[in-house]
Length: 354
Image (cartoon, rainbow, N blue to C red; front, side):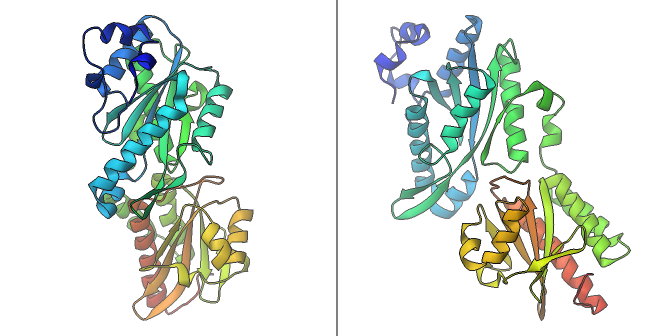
C-alpha cells in the first residue's frame, strides 16, 4: 500500500489527503491505487500538461488460474502482481488496479521510445515482474501479462485519445500471442482498429477452416488452405508435419526438413503446448533444434489420429522469436484441423500427404 509520504509527492494526492483517508484511495485487494483515484490523477496530470506514459497491464490466462487453482489463489496472484508492479515502478510513477485482472501504470520517466522499451524489457526479464514461476501454497503458477502503452503528449493530447491508443496497443499485443509489451508507434499502429485485432469467434473460425479444407483439390492443398484461416485469425506463423516415420516436413511447402524424435511422450489427450522449448530440448533434442533453427521459440503440437491409427503430428508455430502463451481457442482449432486431416487420410487410405 502506498504511504502518505509517497503519494504526497504529487500535488493531486497531497490535496486529496486533506479531504479523505489514505485507505479510501487504495484497492482493497491489491493495495495499489483504486481505479477512480488513479484515473482522476491521470486526468489531472494531462490537464497540467505533464509528460507521461500510460500503460494497461492485462494478466494472461487469469481465468484459467481461477478455474484451476481457485479464486483464493487468483486473489493472491493479483496482490503479488500489484505489489511487484509498485516496487518496479519505484519513484517513476504510480500503479492502480483498473478492474479484474487489469492494472494501469502512470509513468513519469523518460518517455522516448528506447527508454520505455528498456523499462518494459526489465519488467519482463528474469527477476522482473513477469515471465516467472510464482509459488503459492505449494503450487507453481507461471505469471505473465500483455501490456499496451502510449505517451502524452507525443501520441495523444487528451485523456480519451491516450487511453484509446494504449488500449489499441494492448489488443495488438494480445493478437501477437500475449506475453509481450507493445509501445504505440503511429507508423506501425495508427491504421489498426480494435475490431480487426480482436479474434473472430471460434464458431466462425471453425466454419472458415472447414470450408477451406473441403475445397482443396488435394490433401496437401486442403491442409494449407485450412491453416491459412488459422494464420489469419489466430496469428500463427508456420505449420510443420511430423509423419508416422518421424520425418519432419514444412507443411506449407511440402519440403522435407529432417528426421526427429517423436513427441508422443509429451502429449496429453492428443495435445501439447509449450511456452518455451525447454522441455523439448530434453525430450526431443533434434526436434527442438529444428524449431530453433526456424526461429520458433514455442510450439503447439496436435496428434493427427483416428481412434485406430495415428498418422503423425501437426506442429503449429507462432510468429518467429515470440514467446507465445497458447490459448484454449488455439488448442481447439489445432485439434479440429488435425482431426479433419486424419479423417481425410483414413478415407483415402493414404498414410502420407506428399
